Image 1: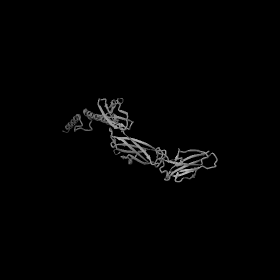
Image 2: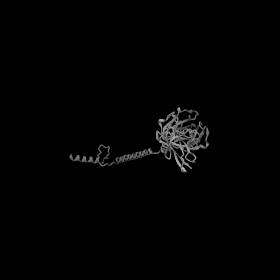
Image 3: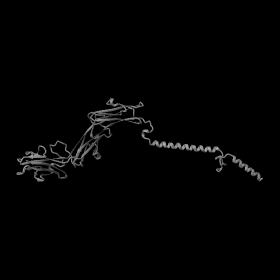
Image 4: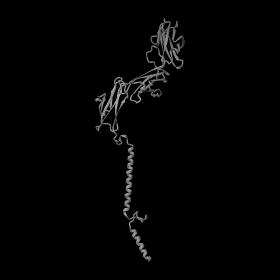
Length: 387
């Protein structure tokens, strides 16, 4: 009985070893060597699929990263609707000046090969029209001239666009003066010196765009700058005047700039003025015996005969920050003080010495100084010769 069971058990094991085994079989043994080819092929297909998917994902990621770094002109066309706008330089032109109007296309990647047709006040400008001619340059007329500039564009796909801009030629005057002094007969510009007070004024002749309506200072913003530094506290609506203290030295200059514009920036004009900084000066003249006023031109070198016994001089000051009659005056002959004119310290009398050996020469000097500022000082010299 025992021998028969042993044969049955051996037969069962032999049959089991010949039966194909798959991983899904509950009787599958991990240590058993598979003999069914179908299971190995399934795993190969699975791993091939995973490998191909990984390559595809990698290439997709690289493409996405590269796409982020492309320049704007290589990005895909998003089919945005093209738009046209006109810009003017300057925004508001001055009389008898050049103005440039530019047509700007947006929303398309290729702006070339478009045909532009320009009009000024309805008149076609054939010489400025044509293929890719998106800029119009022309001279303006006198103050108050109204212009309407329009353009029509035919793009390569046959689509038409048009736009127009209007403006009126405007201007403003800018003047300045300082608190310095000069003789009553002086007809030139009174120049500032260090510590002078300068007042700059603007008189606008500004029109509404495309109209003949003058805008008052209350409708305009005045933006002031000094040496390219914006002065916010001096700027604003109706602030058409600027006052400031000169902190430059003689030989330097102050540049005052002004922008006049409207609140919506539809009108904008710019100008600047250069103000030189001078030094105080004194000049010596002969005086009129009757009036005591300067006579003739300024004296630098003087030759007289021995017959002249007395000479009367007067000095005039230019560009001091202090009244001439309150300056500290000093007259010198060969560096020695001589008496002035008493209540008129800017005048002096020189008595020619007698018995001198001829030819005789001397030097006369007049010095004026601001008593409140030691640096504000001027001097003039006359070389006198008797022969």
